[in-house]
Image 1 (tube, rainbow, N blue to C red):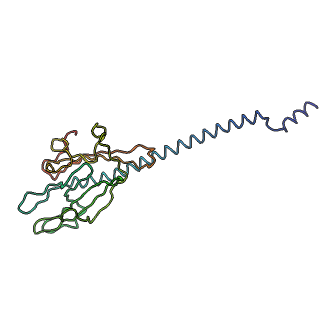
Image 2 (cartoon, rainbow, N blue to C red):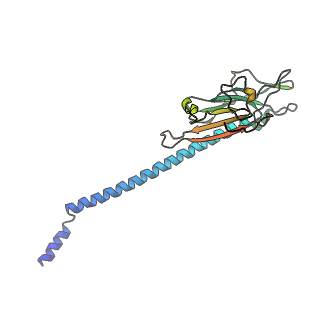
Image 3 (cartoon, rainbow, N blue to C red):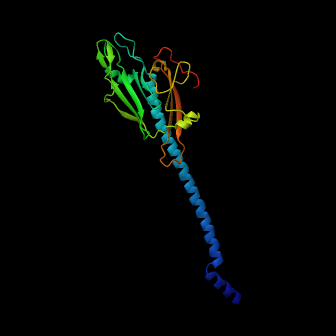
Amino acid sequence: MLAISQRLKRSESGFTLIELIVAMAIFAVAMTLIVGLFTGFTTRFTEQRAATDSAAVAALGMNELTKVVRAGTKIKVRNADPLEAFVSATDKSMVLYAYLASDAALSDDTLGSAPVRVRFSISATGELTEERWDAIRSDEYWTFSALPASAVKPRVVARKIILPTAAAVLAGNASHLFTYLDVDGNPIPTPITTRAKDIRTVKITMSVQADVTSRADPVQIQNRVGLPNLVSSRMGKDG
């Protein structure tokens, strides 16, 4: 009876100090594992979401740039050589003439579709802005107001673009936003003035970082856009 009584007393006394410490240690380890798994899942999800957002922004911007550059064209003028497709071209901006289907409403029965003048430029905050100017009919030709002039259709086509450093470009580890190639695929030094007529391809390199915490790597896409409206346009060699 005494042995039974002692066993009952031990069972009613609850956990011993050692048992309690062991239980707390096991619980702490389990909680650490759970928190670690949750944190890791959250981090990976955030990184994947940021990468997806960056890719979407880059794709939208690249699609618009490709559409406009591919439509680049010379403009016929009265009693003079045609205006070159590119008005100006730097590694961060460009101004060019283009025929775009979206501007068919500006077409004329005798002159056909009206061209537009388009400028792409990037701000210090990484916003890529597109500005358009409608053509003005002048007898049998199209003309444009002199620059600078207020654009009628300004809009932001991409955000959070990262521009490379000059050192990275010089070392060959990065490319400028815009690189202009001649008919043989050779880069033309920027800013381009007298050699605007030599541009046959534009290499566009867009790096986007949509994650403000920079936990996810930037997304970079690159495309070479030829100008089929120019007689000698072709994609060119590596450059």
